[in-house]
Length: 395
Image 1: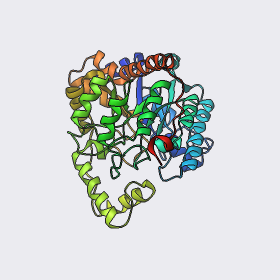
Image 2 (image 1 turned 180 degrees about the vertical axis):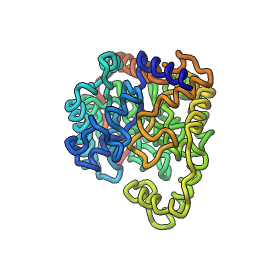
Image 3 (image 1 turned 30 degrees about the vertical axis):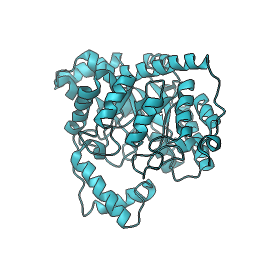
Image 4 (image 1 turned 60 degrees about the vertical axis):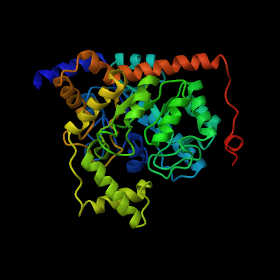
């Protein structure tokens, strides 16, 4: 174990570990209103967050997609404003701690920041509600540094179905397809975490670029609607995309996934919306007092890595922890310092250094570069889309 861990740390010193999803910006908003004097992540914040600079360094994190999530319950214009505030928070955080972070807008910039010994900081929007049905807003988010958008969060958006809402569009509407096409033209990654299986399939078919799952795992291993079915993993392979396997207990443990289903049913019976986390999370906290949550383990996490490799292949696997976005994590993976434990477990299963380097960050860097190349080609043949939601979807 000691030799394996040392080998993993040496590997991650030379090859960036790039995590697909961390919700520290939202935690900073909720805890201190973005006041990094009151949440100084240059010190130990383990009493309040899963993430601080010291633990990022201990976890060998070389790149991070910071989620600029806002709740889908916000009205369109309010959601756009709140997303801008989240983006500002990431820029302010990076500016406050320049010795630890550097903004990255491309694969080459990720490597430049990593080579300087800092965490390359990218941004991902979590839910299409953040653009308010406006392609112009989508483009401006890209200008501000956003490099992926999850098409939905827990609720449907007017043009795409969520994994945890009743289907309306059988995947994507006409405007939803246009959103994907415009993301391809800009070079923004299409993120399929949180969307329904039909949306996954429709979006992969519509996308000229590789797609990603920023924080999802394998449905065959844990039957959660947030995970990708095997046929989608096969489509992802053919699309040359990447699924960044997550650590969320309800998505990696079959027992925890069933617990969440039962909690969801109980919440609905109690009149609580399971898609509104401000209501659902406190409900779950109370419900767990009489219905204990099954414990998730590192082995549960690793099982998804193994399965995804078997179905999609080693070139289509990454890491998306979802730290600071969930109330609890698997035993042994309680914060961002613990990534080497997962890679050590894979190393002990016989995964080669080349395999581990691909999973750590090589695959997502390839996807970024592919998306950048597709965008350059598309920009030679078409300009910014002027389509509107109203004209395409008839609202």
